[in-house]
Image: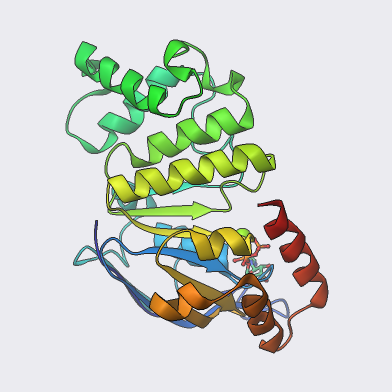
Length: 270
Ligand SMILES: Nc1ncnc2c1ncn2[C@@H]1O[C@H](COP(=O)(O)OP(=O)(O)OP(=O)(O)O)[C@@H](O)[C@H]1O
Ligand SMILES: [Mg+2]
């Protein structure tokens, strides 16, 4: 677990054109080691852009990113990937579909270590089996199955193991349960909570599910037009209901009512 410090992040897409879009507007955030922060915000608020900035997918206009005491602002994305685990909405992303479940786990496991992928031994194999059986999806008996043949939910659960197996300094989850049916989403969320708590990971989780946002983790931020409009933790967060949160959303200028209906129906679904 590591501390994450974002200072004055600014990103304008298509700068200098009529389509210029300020997606991150002087955003600062300090996450303590082991903080599990849920991230809310309407479509286009800049949530995924924030993650991409941390992952090094583009150059910032301005700002500084420090992870675990190291300034990573100028690091390449593949260097950052050694310390940052991530998972997205699309279960196809982030896994190698033509490799087996075991090979995918081995790849994730050995990526950071100086060990070779080919040096994975029987003890590692037993460890992978144990991890998979903790999912309670029967995947421990399908270690030789190609990743691409799993259902979306099974793959997302396996991808979550991959994202956390090398004990990353930071875990980024971008709507990782949005494409799953409500029951499976619930299971993957429970697994998320379990893994993050067990490994004491510093984690940011984007969701449109307000209930999950308040129930998971220890802190919730709401993004609005590239800024953090709300940052709630502790007792204030414990007392906050989904209805209160919706009201706060309303108070944010430029917020569309239609979004609330979607958010509410999604949070009712669980
Ligand atoms: N590569 C890009 N090029 C141009 N504009 C972009 C790019 N990526 C994001 N944007 C713009 O930046 C803004 C923020 O987008 P972002 O994807 O971060 O929103 P979001 O909060 O993740 O929304 P959603 O809830 O819909 O996923 C949007 O206006 C989007 O169109
Ligand atoms: Mg997004």
